[in-house]
Image (cartoon, rainbow, N blue to C red):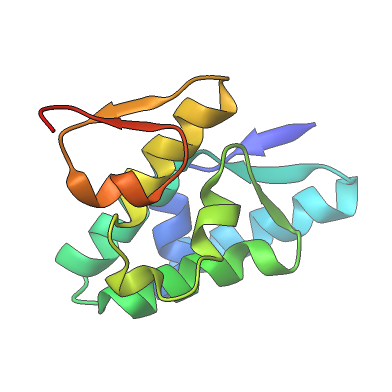
Length: 133
C-alpha cells in the first residue's frame, strides 16, 4: 500500500519542528517501512514544500532543493511524478527555467504532449512551444 504525505508531514520531517509532530512523522515512516508499505509525494507537495521552506522557514533555495532531493535518495519516500528526476538537475537552484517550471514541463511531456509558454527560458527544454516569438 502507498500513503501520500502532505506538505505538513514533509515540513516536519525536514525541519524537525514542532518536535512532537516531527517525531510522530518519523515514527509513521518507520511503521510504513516495517509493514512493507511506501510513502509517496506528489509534485504538488514537493513544490509547496519548497516554497514553504524558503518563505516561511527562511531556508535558502539551494538548501531547500537539496533537502527535498535527499528525501528521495534512499527510496523510503517515492515521487509520484517527475520531482525526483527534476531535483537531480545540476545547478537547479539557479537554473532557467526553474524548479516549478521544470515540474510543469515534465508533467506535460510525460503525458505525451508538449508545453506552451511565454517563458523564453523554457525553450531550452524539449517539446516546448514559446508563444509570441
